[in-house]
Length: 276
Image (cartoon, rainbow, N blue to C red):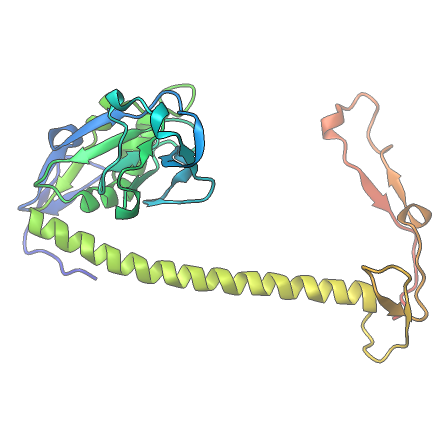
């Protein structure tokens, strides 16, 4: 946890509240250049340049999944589409509107797709700005709110440029960005480990279900070949029947005037005694 400052002041914004006394309140366009990406993607080429699209932007990071590569000879360089390290991509429209990511060194020289690019001035720590884009006071209270003024989620560079950001000096910006790099890296590692544990538990759950419904609950039961390769052995006293021989699909419960999308199909089972 970072220590509190000695003095605070009112930011003048209800959704922000108080900020450290020496911090400034500034609009994004006052300390950065904002531009649009390409309207149409160039033709694809497997050994070409990476094209960063909205689907590659995920909560501050570039996701390489489904990354497209494009022909360098088909790129309209007059549109200035080349990304540089520490540029920030902001998704312009669609389901991912207002999500953002900073460009890491490995994607320096990549090409921007349809979305907007923020390039901070030299006296601003771009990583600090990229973290503010993920904060609730910027993302929820400004970017997402502005994007919902149209019928479909959408942001333009004028709206983005009016985004209010609170700033310390460059030394503190860098310290905060470094602190968040370290903290989020640790949390990401924990999330990854938890995710792997969850996947293992899901696999164990599936095995438990599969074993119970194909082998029964008695581990000492005599077994016989099922005759089905993907099923293997089953308990000797078990039968194999087609589903339709044991149940019926009931679609008669609702009136004929009911719209088809409201119909619920379910299986009616006769009563059976349980024998394991």
